[in-house]
Length: 231
Ligand SMILES: *Cc1c(COP(=O)(O)O)cnc(C)c1O
Image (cartoon, rainbow, N blue to C red; front, side, top):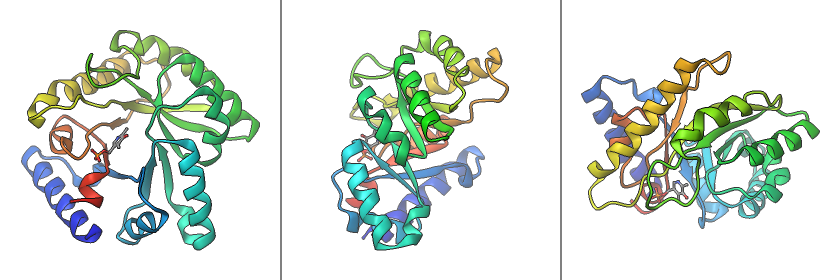
């Protein structure tokens, strides 16, 4: 079933990309595996997925340890933290995550930087932006984002790859479009400010109900749970 679902998802991605002239290889699928078993994660990896997303550090640690003892090849996959991260979990988070999508305050970034320095790591992160008043509790206000990125870019053990947002729950995916567009425009605006020596590239946006619209608006990373595991 997971294999069939992924085939269907890839077909849809190709279709959307052909309509708007984007290269489907620009779109990264992160399989969000919260509440799924290590067995299901193994299955999704065997179907060709290389990026695994979790939303709780404790649950991710358990699965990470289980999977790397089952099969050493599984230790080559990339782990993504997509859920809200508490400052007191930063130490554990930097040990296992390749990309933390949910940095939503300067305070959290400073703590991540400190913990990453202790293990000699440059931690890749995304800045979570609260593009809507509704659904999402976490994330920076769009108006504060550039300023915070300016400060975070001074931290030596952090690299800001891009931005992430969660669109509100809507009955029609078209209604999510303005939030995705806002994130893309914010990325472009920040890149024009040249706060860093490099550009933000990643836009982590789009979930099961709205990923096609997110791709049309420039998403480079879609976070899929139900589309993969429930179909
Ligand atoms: C659960 C979750 C997803 C995946 O949601 P689906 O609607 O099942 O695709 C994506 N992003 C975050 C932050 C999540 O918590």
